[in-house]
Length: 417
Image 1 (cartoon, one colour):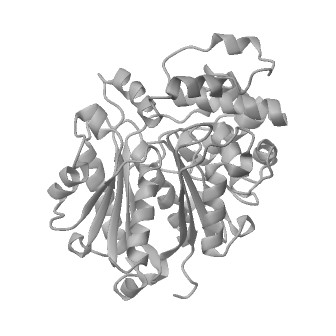
Image 2: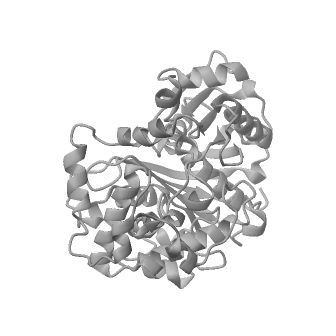
């Protein structure tokens, strides 16, 4: 089997692009990625287009990739459409990686793109999140999830939550209350994640939010679903990202001094586990498999981009990926070890919380950040000496966990290559 490398990356600024279409966002990211790789579009042998909302919001339920990529000039190549909720573009990466590793293709493209903000479609947007659950059993599952934190003494403000929100905010909040009850995790520790990621985002020119917040300001923000305040929840973003992946046979066609090796990509779909069977969580399963494939362990990772759809999610996923023992994720957040300049920085991009969360593009955006870091091209937010990077991207919800999780490991270009 051959090795696979990220040769080119590209992404748009994230935010509310009211007057920009998915096609336009995709074209911008693709153009940047091809230029970065030093290749033209004719070199691409296959493409994966990753998106979740073109159907429900714009009626383009099928052949999304063909409608987006054909106008750009991609003709007569396989185009695969990938929808795996928030894990869509990391799932596309997994498929593309396998295609290159197996020798079927030498140069491929992964595009993640999402437009979530329309002035007249907010109700459809929020309703669409329920489609990332098992609709047949969701009501019973939600009741079970919401009961996880029963017995936790709640402050008066917990009764004051209101406003429109994704059902996932209620799910993450219930999981946070369970963690608080089981391990003593505090509001302040959860807020520390949000404050850290907001601080990181000021150094990312493509982040949706570029302002700092203190722990106190995070806690004082509008309550969404206890303990989550608005500042602890990722925004709904528009944006796109693209990755050009090549086999080792193609390294002589590109600047191999900037090619980032894909050490492993691991996808998990979870299991029917009990809520306190943490070691069976799908992120733990995916991470363990990725470490095994790469011949690495958590101790080898220098930088990570994790799926912080809420601030609590980073605490939980850091534990599942082996960066903290179960119950210690909150203390990791307030220790400073996961902040830029710390032992193992997490979400230096600003994370989903502050950089933004354009669902179908999020995984590819995480990879964009890790590639910049491993190349030493991240500017003010550069993690010095980073050699091994990890991305963790979850999607949907089923049972007591996400419905899909992708954990990937990457290695910096060899010095002097």
